[in-house]
Image 1 (cartoon, rainbow, N blue to C red):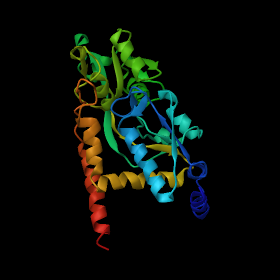
Image 2 (cartoon, rainbow, N blue to C red; image 1 turned 90 degrees about the vertical axis):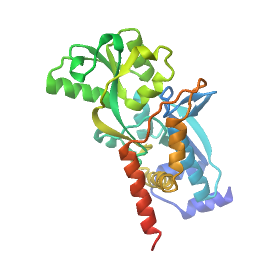
Image 3 (cartoon, one colour; image 1 turned 180 degrees about the vertical axis):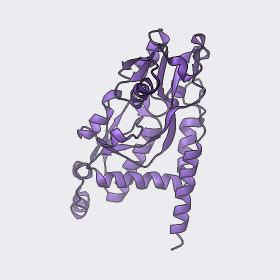
Image 4 (cartoon, rainbow, N blue to C red; image 1 turned 120 degrees about the horizontal axis):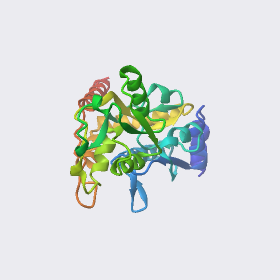
Length: 290
């Protein structure tokens, strides 16, 4: 404890989040349930790609500051996940978190660890095969999310007269589609893939053939004043990339079985993510020559 206090004193910084973590030897990690393979609950504990990344950050902090750090998990509602971080109710968001200009005004994002696009999920029997076929239909979207903004923009630009049904979370969106209350559910591609591995009648559903809207980058999320924490998180993600440990993590959650029945989301690394890894690897190789 004394060593931790000394280190805390020597590394006094203008970062209230990191200061609090070191002083209390506790970190609160926020997560969202039911979003395979990013974060969900297994045997009463959070698990998933974002969870592993956050735990790697915690290990980094322990080694850097030579101190024990207890982890407190805080399950948060999907629609409130960014507010929880902005209001300092948790230290890092370990969940589905697509970076956007609007969200950047509220919180800070780490460097990307995933690139994805939005997709819409429909029932095959409805024969909705192109985005213009959504015109006149009711489409579900997470309240306050990027999909709701994209639908509003599409309505304005193309006058599709899409009725937008705002939902609290991903499960509600999928359930409304299953019960025919909406014709489509628009959300991130990887979340749809994660949900489909759990649906017994998945053959009755289809994803849109092409991604919808702009490419989204996922990051871990901290408050705007957590300057040093963001730097540490970025450093840890870079290290995972340059050491190729990220490849193992990615394969574990996106290419390997994640259900008791042995289902996988089968989502290879995107070209953007491969390019990012190669760029960081090249930068690391060049810096090591000096």
